[in-house]
Image 1 (tube, helix red, strand yellow):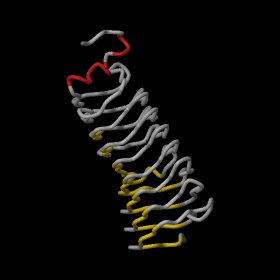
Image 2 (tube, one colour):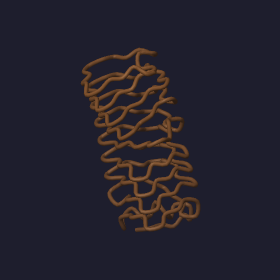
Image 3 (cartoon, helix red, strand yellow):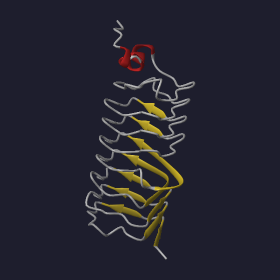
Image 4 (cartoon, one colour):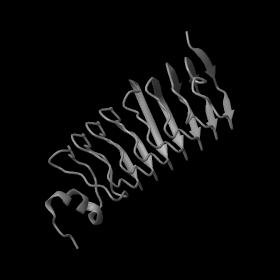
Length: 189
């Protein structure tokens, strides 16, 4: 049985490799914590918030994220693809997620607000109704993704091939629509 933590706040903690293993956190808040050395095993977060935390390069292969908010966090080069897929719900605000991977996840309704998503892997990901609000998607990969009803209107630097990504009723700004035409080498002025 996992070690259970409810309604607690954790501040300014630097976690080591195994410090988080076999624990369940519900309605907890983490402020200014460093998880970059963690190799999570059998960890569950339910209705938790992470504020100004560092996850860069952490191994979250065995983590359940159920209604979790990341705010002003560094999450570079993190592989979310092996997270528990049961009730997988995450939201990001003002985060750096460069080089992270969401390969083949179901992320319906996820919000990315003011995030850096440079070279993020969204291949084969279900991005239905995802909001990309003021995000930098430079070199993000959307091959074989489903982005129906996704909102890209305020985001920039994306390159999406409509022949290889489902985009039914997705929303784009007129000035950034050229990111859908890149493969055709069309000049839009």
